[in-house]
Length: 329
Image (cartoon, rainbow, N blue to C red):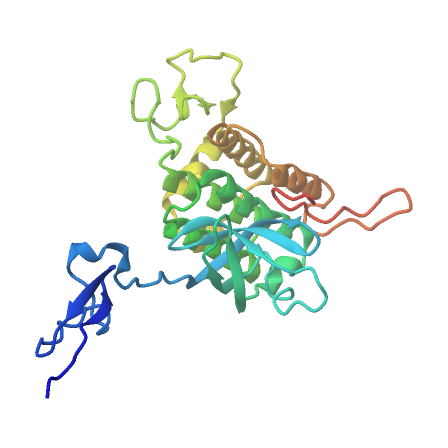
């Protein structure tokens, strides 16, 4: 009796192979066994591990603006990723679950999904609400001013933990009831220090001579600080800086914020320090901030003890503080 058999054709790696009786089965492919393929010949046929799209971070909303029919684009300050752009989809709908928590002037814990253009906010948890920032208009305007300064100063996607801690500390001080003007001056000086453009108040910026008591100095933001009377400088019309204001500037650089809160200063000296530091910050930013202009308008409507004057029939209430980079699209 003659046995009959046929060769079996099977598909193996893009070509047919013929197996005969008695042949051993080929070694199974590493990919088919669930093991990573180490042979470069596998190419893109090897297993691929998907990237993690979700991540969690602390964040403070610096600015926001409406986008489309129900979305909102946010500028967030995070400690690890720095300043990032994110989109909250459907947040303006009444049924949104994150609309009530994703607000400025608060510390949030966010879960985001990496997107092609903007990261997408998926979950929001309120960490610190800082309700005191919303009790007085001057406090709210000061908080917006600090946030806009950081928004103008930082590039996107750069680690910014010192700046994040600085802004959070400023919000804590405002929430605790510290004078808004003191917090703003402290924040301006610390921000310039972190940016590497700290103003010089101990030596002449021209001759590097250590200033002595009684020296007449002038404040030249373009040169980076004070200029002694031995030099003409770029402009002889620059206003002089009083000795008391110079001492206060040194105190903002050297003293901690708790000690600064207890200083008793004449209103004239505080106004002079506010003016010269504002000129320096404006020179560093290369432009003025909208929130500072609004803050000056708000302060102009307050009396000397920090209370708003009684409204009359000829005065109107101040508008709500503008949001940096705000606007509808």
